[in-house]
Image 1 (cartoon, rainbow, N blue to C red):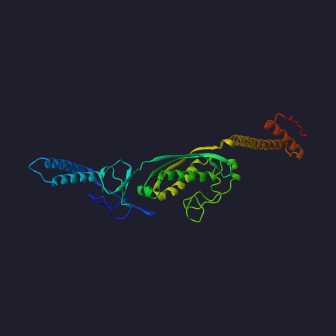
Image 2 (image 1 turned 90 degrees about the vertical axis):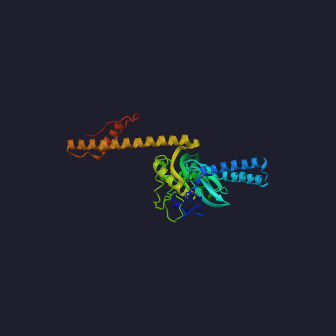
Image 3 (image 1 turned 45 degrees about the horizontal axis):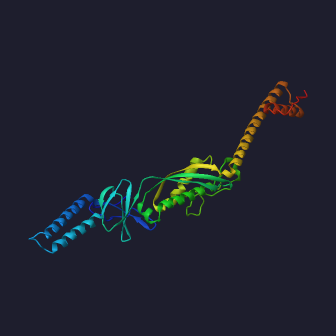
Length: 340
């Protein structure tokens, strides 16, 4: 996150805010090194111990020495409270008496104002597995769908202060987006004609239709995409949907992929039989179209050799017999009657 140049000896945010969104304006700042502070604490401890030693040995008997020694110890504890260790890709959101003061992303051994309330959180990539969920697709068939979401915290202050628990927020929004995606598309290409046209999968605030990116889409653009065959397109739609939902709370979704897709167990057997029947019908359609094409070529060649056109009855009889031979209907007993 960009920030204005700052002095290395101050922990106060300076310059213009780096990010503005909602009610939280995120600042970033640098803390001072903790080693000089640690050396000061060690010196204070030694000084306090020495003062207590002197207070108990004559001829130096001053009632102020124990008080000063106690003050040294109290100051040491106060300074030690400001020490903090941050690992790479880790941040600390700092609050001063309930007011947001800035976000520390400087890795290492640092020292902050001891009055700061600090909340550390990781900025590393996280993997969120959603599902499998049981959802009705665009046709109404119950299907099971699951997804793997890769995300990270990009703005620590918003992730900490905009929502109560950003981890639960990611889980809930991922499940909602996945259910919405599955409900807007048919499972199988054979069911596309039964799917109702949809107007988009996004949650944008505009009044136009689209896919959540502000780009209008035709009414039947999404219903033509099936869950089984549109994996790359669906992953892109799911990613855009999640990014729109997560951006306001400082979450960056890097990748979203469908990891599980199947019919629900109660209809899986019936749908498999339906798919097998559709495949058989499609195969027979291809065979029939090929046979008709062969017959047309054969009759055209025969008429060219005979030098005249066949009578309609002759042509029909030959087409019928040739279809039986080419398709291989074993139950039929073709009778060749060309009428020549």
